[in-house]
Image 1: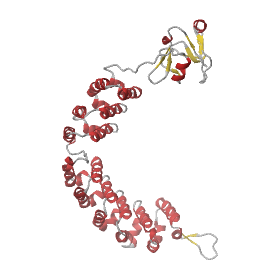
Image 2: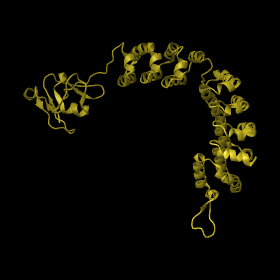
Image 3: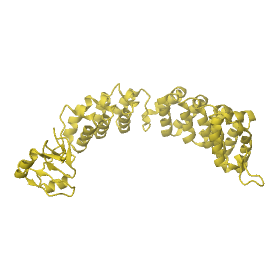
Image 4: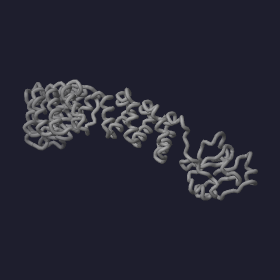
Amino acid sequence: MLTPDDDGGAAGNDRGRRCRRRPWGLSVTIPTPNADDYAKVDHDGNIWVAPGRFSLRPSSWINGPITAPILPNPAAASRYLGGMLTPQPRRWRPGQAVALAMEPQSSRMLQKCLEEGGIQEFDLMFQEVLAGFPTLAGHAFGNYLCQKLIDKSPPEHRALILRRLAGSIARLSVDVHGTRVIQNLIELCTTPEETALITLEFKGLAVNARSQAYDWVFDELSDECGKLATDQVGCRVFQTAFDVSTGTVRERLALAITENAAQLSVDQWGNYVVQRLLHVGDKVMRRRLIQVLLPSMATLALLKFSSNVVERCLRRAPDEALVDAIVAEMCMSGPERLAALMCDPYGNYCVQTAMRVYESSQAKLEHLAGLVRPHLPLLKVRYRQPVVKNLAASYPDLIYERRPGDLFPRNKL
């Protein structure tokens, strides 16, 4: 309950009036003359009080500047207090926009100003923020104001932003905050001038895949597939390019990936490009890629990155004949090779994936289970427990058997 303070309480009761208890459970003493000297309503609807006038409880006085809202319901407060509280307009001082944009609360305030303000306020803020755009674009809070400005900017203003960001776009593209601003710019590019500015800045490393003006980028990706697809950023560009390409352009990219499949599959970044082709490519592309990798499937299954490619091949093979060929290459070339796969920390997952793919064919699953069962005791303890647990859950007959007279199934291992 709000109470008058010790120094001014009695005088306040004499000069003012006491409000009855309101629905939110607060009572306030507001001096009748010049009420605006004691309480204000800010642009967010909070009611603020002058220092030393009110407190939340007798032992907690409000001292210092007006820094704490005390009444949460401005509509009710204005009605009960007779309209004595004056709403304060939202203000920001010219020359402070860049500094304000770096604080969470004031950044939101500036964004709200852009949303509700007119063209004059937009022009004023744009000219001020433009000077600090490279810094704000990579800032945790400033990037939101930059995105808001881009959204509300016409093409000629976006061109000014691109010129101001010259030399910084590549750096911002790999920044956790700046990448949002650059993506927003690329998304909204509509004029040849904007397109030319972005192309010049990225020097072929960025893709606005919606425009036919970027066909030369696809040519560059195809020619330098082995180099670009093994780069951390390049592999993402390659996947995006493949996703949005069509017709002969996609076919050219698929051929480039297939020709470099062996190199890409064992690379920490390149394997994602191969998996992308297997995920979104058509049957012809997938069949061609798997046939290229088929002779080395057993070796690829033993390696950290390429084992993921092998599992993807098993899941995305266009027909059962290719699945049988992959399984035969991995598991049916000899007991030594299968034992090596079962005991390998990566290879054993490829074997489990093959068994899941064969679930639709009972005969093939039983045949593969018969090949796998003799090697289960060879598994290292650290690998055996999760593998056996997964196999027992999916294929209990592989792990357990029940003999005549047994109350419970026996572990075959």
